[in-house]
Amino acid sequence: MAGRIRDDDIAEVREKARIDDVVSGYVTLKRAGGGSLKGLCPFHDEKTPSFNVNPARQFFHCFGCGEGGDVISFLMKVDGLTFTESVERLAEKFGVQLRREDGDDQPARPRGPSRGRLIEAHKVAQEFYAEQLGGPDAVVARQFLHERGFDQAAAEMFGVGFAPRDGEALVRHLRGRRFTDEEQVAAGLAALGRSAYDRFRGRLVWPIREANGDTIGFGARRIFDDDRIEAKYLNTSETAIYKKSQVLYGIDLARTAMKDSQQAVVVEGYTDVMACHLAGVTTAVASCGTAFGQDHARVLRRFLGDHGSSGGEVIFTFDGDSAGQKAAMKVLESDQVFASQTYVAVAPEGMDPCDLRLREGDEAVRELVAKRQPLYRFALGNILARYDLDRADGRVDALRDAAGLVASIRDRTKVDSFSRELAHMVGMDVDEVRAEVRRAASRPPRTDDRRTSRVPEAAPAEPARPALPSLSDPRFLIEREMLKLVIQHPAGVGRTTAHVTTDDFTHPTFQGVWAAVTAAGGPAGAGDDPGWAARVRAAATDPAVIAAVTELGVEPVRGTSDPTPTFAVAYVYRLQELTTSRRIADVKARLQRTNPVEQALDYNRMFGELVVLEQHRRRLREGAVGQPGGQS
Image (cartoon, rainbow, N blue to C red):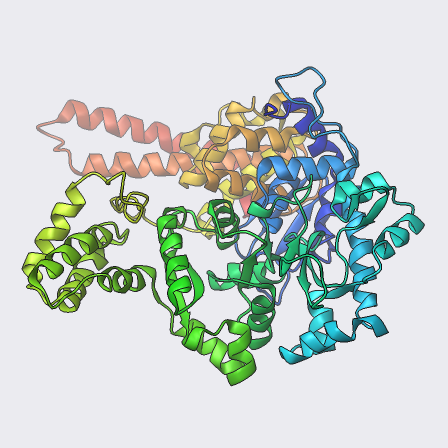
């Protein structure tokens, strides 16, 4: 396995990948003054633009939802990519050769066609297949869609197409678009025999896309009885851009709805995804040619923003038959990959969402999802069904088997209610059930029990952190403006902040920002360095501080677009005047609690200190008079 990407290559990617070029592919940006651009935020719904991009400092920040960062973090957030994936994609786009730490000039990816060529080949192939769907040879394909309730508009919405039965139709088309046979094979669109031939022939095809809409593979269904390939579905084989364990069909259409609703619906097939979206369940996705696994779960978690909160939902749809029950139990085994609440939606009479929509309409599909039940409850029913509950020994065995499942529930507030439910289902005393659940919780997982060994113990709930006041609160105006000057115009600030300390800031986040400024070397040494703001951001570790740096880096400074050292000095005076006022208040409070007769020495010392502080405050106030910092 290749090592980590070199830091200097990552820095080159950040330098060459213009954030306005990247963001404009997702957001319509307009000039907002002060060198900034503004548009509607891609991370939350809004009618008034609050999403700002500053090309000069390579930062973005939304004043509506608080999302912010650099060009790499933007791509991570908007497309659900890892850091490495984002760097690689930007390097490909902007022509940066990546090297790894464990080799002097080791390429970042295997030899072969570039990612850009593979993506372009798939784009051309998808357009070709979609065009073929309207031809005379695709009558059976169109009939297949019609019988399942999908019209032409639906086919266009999902990019469905038809692969001609001619074994070289796509190969010839791609050759005509200057794609070599090597590139077609590397993309998984063609295979090699005596010559190159189409990977998919005489099949209905669905484009499998990444979150950003790029097609990276295809799923193809058999529709002709004389198809010599027995498999009902064929999928693109593993390629440099297509990893079946990491892709989800429909994620490009579902990602925004998943983030907004904090819900994901996992179905089993392409037509099920289509049926759900057309019925109004716009969070539906499906795995492609493989069972839903932990890598798929990690992809979902990125789009759900699932970092330990229990607010999100992942809903699996299964048939109510034995195969569906088996699939649900398999999900239960890997349920630890979700911090979200996991549910099961069981379709009646063995119908999948596509069949359900066709027979009973869109409302039935929405109702199927609405009537979801917790995965653990569904699993309890499956466990108890294996035992004869009319016999005493059967009830005891059922209780022991099911108690481990109840004990593994993450949400500890639900354990008691599930214990009562289990007591009712088994027909035993609730105190006896509770005792067995406690015993199960204290036992280590059994390595021979696949049902419970993979379900983690519930983690104790972390104490809630008190909410911090808004960074835009008027109480912190001077702190905010001072830090904006430091981050955006370090050359104009220079050495004016030599005596500023963390104690001059009262908001914890602004204290963290100043600590990061100090760790980055301070504004005196920054000069006109275009990477100064990035250095400050890199010096921070608290996510709230990192977000604040980007926010302060894009919001225009009040009162000027080109601050001078005199302008900055006024803010320093005003900031330190507020610090002095706080110290005066502290001394006055102590002075009031001190007896001037019995504690005369302490009283006189504090009185002298108060006089000095008042004089110092007056000098600071006079220094700021007539400047924007003093008028704010």
